[in-house]
Amino acid sequence: MRFFDCNVGFGQPPNAAATVLRTAEELVRELDFCGVAEALVHHTAIRHESAQAGNCLVVDETADHARLHPTWAILPPQTHEFGTVHEFLADMRRHGVGALRAYPAEHRYLLNGLTFGSLFEELVPRRIPLMVGPHWAALTQLLADFPDLTVIIVGHGDWGDDRYFRPLVARYPRLHLDTSNYQTPDGIADFVGQYGHERLVYGSGFPPFQMGGALLTLARADISDEGKEAIAGENLRRLLREADP
Amino acid sequence: MTNSSPIAQDFLTRGRCETCPVVDMHGHYGPFRGIYFPSPYADGMLRAMDRAGVARVVCSSHTSLVDPERGNREMAQVIRDHPDRFLGYRAVNPNYPDQVEAEIARFPHDAGFVGFKFHPSGNCYPLTGDNYLPALEYAHQQRLIVLSHTWGASQYDSPEMLGEVAPKYPDATFIMGHSGYGEWDAAFGVARDNPNVYLDLTAAYKVAGIIERICREVGSQKALFGTDLPWFDPYYCIGCICFSHITDDERRNILHRTADRLLAPFLTGSQPPEGKQERRGSD
Ligand SMILES: [Zn+2]
Image 1 (cartoon, rainbow over the protein chains, first blue to last red):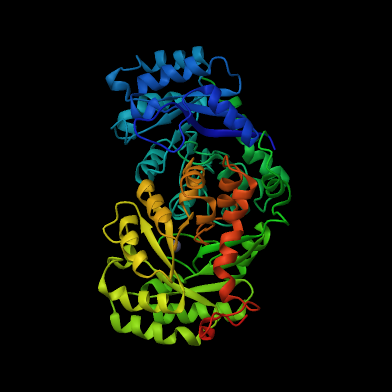
Image 2 (image 1 turned 30 degrees about the vertical axis):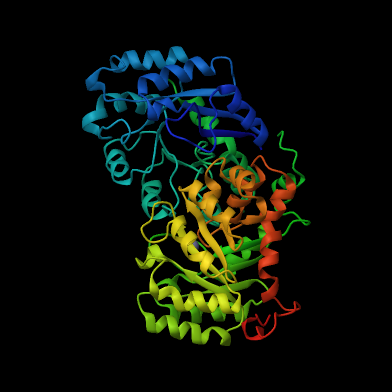
């Protein structure tokens, strides 16, 4: 299987952690240990320091690693911290950034049309994936406002969140989910049985999640080999091919 | 893949490792209020176990955490139906002391229970509270296992609270559910300091680097595989163990060796300790 992890990071967190990979080299070694071919990457500064620092660091530090694809955080266009929407999109193109991430809690904003309408109206036709954590109420409103936005919900789980996300998956065909914390026994097979294998993308959530949990869960899921390859990497490769900043 | 572990290779390519069975020391049973389980009952749990080579699971039914009489009865039936695969923890609810006594009285009469399940957070009652004392004393007398939910900084079941209780009942075996999630230093200290305390990896396995820390700071012989099944896919926990930076010897300790040793007194064919016949499983 050609694993493409949609959800990994590197960089020093502010507090003590059991695993800290400071550099992109260390992350590549861990990907090699687990047999993962490539990854969509963020720098942990994006969450703990600032969106500005994280967006700069991830581009600088992945430049020498063709297997690592940088992702950026969004901020409300009204504060102009990344210039205008069109300047932001041009910067994405220049730096090879193919996907965005939203951190409404850490960056303290409301993820809705009022705040992000001018950006999301540009993301929809460009099919740029937006990765968001399991903020169910915000996501439900966001998708109602932008039903064609390409969204990847990352890190859902712990208490199997199917009751939240299945109504959204059924309604919005551009909605995808990562598998980093989808630990429900038979969860992947049950989901694929209902919605097909196109809507899930492999992610590990590393760090803080261990890399091997989601990996073995997908590798041994009770679905077809074709479905596994799609979730392991092909779905994400397709999404990134379609994206055009 | 540069991970050269034969155990990891086996799980990845075959789905199980014939030389390394798995024993799950922390399971549940049945539906639960806040979560969708595709497979909450014995047939689905057994399917997940068979695929991953999980030989046995030791469970408390979700119902038993609320209503022990009804839930333990349900669990006893599952054990009777599948005596080679399911063992049980008899849950007690400390908010109803008369029911605690009743569960202790029933203990010898149901086969396959290896001890008690405490969920102090779930019952909003402290692990150190008096209403747990009869079950603790019985577990000590009968050399039973007590699996208690623990969580970092909890006012009901922090690692320190288990550290206060465990030394008073040295003949009972304590499993610290979730390894005191988040309060790792305290939990590892309690496991190191008390020969009768073990760390359950359920949910904790997910935190990158924790398995390595346990092996280094406490010892792999003190860590137990657990999944909260039907909550979490056995492969997720196995994957975390397989892709931790530890040795295969440590993987074997976690996946089954320590559990085999703890469960041996409760299984058919092993010699029951003197006068402890009534506590054995009947499978
Ligand atoms: Zn539990």
